[in-house]
Length: 584
Image 1 (cartoon, rainbow, N blue to C red):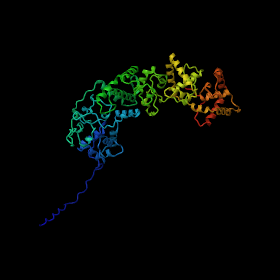
Image 2 (cartoon, rainbow, N blue to C red):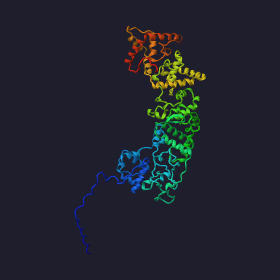
Image 3 (cartoon, rainbow, N blue to C red):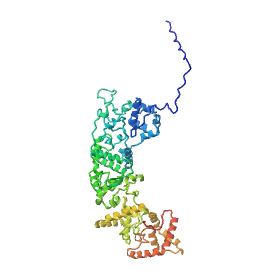
Image 4 (spheres, rainbow, N blue to C red):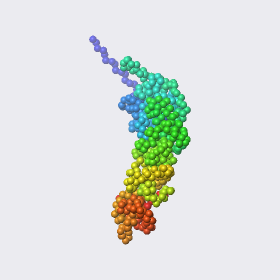
């Protein structure tokens, strides 16, 4: 058989070889030619869907264009890929630094919820946005987007249309973005991106798309109370440090926001609804928001405290009145002020001291693990002090003379009582521990308990609580210079004090017992009635000692000052100057 001849060679190209195309200045072939600008408040998923729709490729292929090498198989992974600041994905898609920041930034509602969860350590508040609610009227806009706040579990009512947000497609009952099927096809943002569930018994096959028009979904209108409550929550999320009056108390917006979330937690828990779960019906969340308006729209604190009992019991974690529960975690100061004011007369004396019920608005003690930066969440603006109790290290054994009006300064037991009460104010430390820290007799706290019962019986206890609270605020505004704890530790070595007095004396004479006793009182801020055994004054001789004390101050003050300077220079402990200190 004759073989076919080889094909003829093609004709050579005519003319010169074409030159490479010139790229205009500032044009990058690696960046897609069409720029899709993020819209303020838009989620990363919404921007990705709009980009995929413009290029008519699947969102997954958009991710590949941006340099994604791993297969993206979930909404969480796609969101993380877009929002991660450590990769160059969005840069390759042509987004500027400002646009990337716009996508990653939180809304005011999202930032307020983030701050709440960080301070109150609520594990369910960290919403990752793996699903979303939606408003049909918003999707019917000329340029529809999926808002970031739709992934926030606190938004149940659309503030623009007063409609309850929806969380499922009415055609297929699928939760938006719960399935990664939306990554496989570019679809208009108002279409359902889920696939129709396959009928049973048909074997494995590709399920058809739902493609339901979400704009046509009927949505229930919110009631007036639900809309007001939702707008109040959104308003409190703005400018967290701005003051605002709520329930007749001046607070910050952040405190008000946290109080609403805490009340909402209690309200929806009573309805059997899980907190911050996007799969819960928005009607239940909106009903919970409406329930808490009865408290927040009241202008009188006493009335608000009464209404609070309908939502929060004294044993609930949101606003407890027991010390153990109150100090276990961060508590909202507004709810605490309302709850504690309502029950202040029925609290024990130790609870009244810990909650500082002598103030106009009581407060919870700050938990030990709470950072100081969280004070704006946990303290009312009127509580200008940092919120920590007065350190016993800077309190004398007996309170300074002239500190409280009506206090008998000649009674050492009354002065020691005030020091011990002041040390207990705003803290949960046992009185027995504070008694030892002040170098008082071990049984003194039992004496204090009897005196408190007598004050309550005579009706003078509440006025004393008010005076103690004012004194504590004054001391925290003007902290004492003297470090009495270090002085009490150093004064346990009585020969050391005697040696300092001997060295300070120009004639190097051994100090008399009365001189040593008075120097111990001035040095430690104590009273000779509670001094160590060698220096203690017998009870029967105390009246004479008061007179002798004034004489020694006039005769030996220069010696006392010189001995203190010797101890201050030689001691490794910080003693604080001067020898004697008085509140301003």
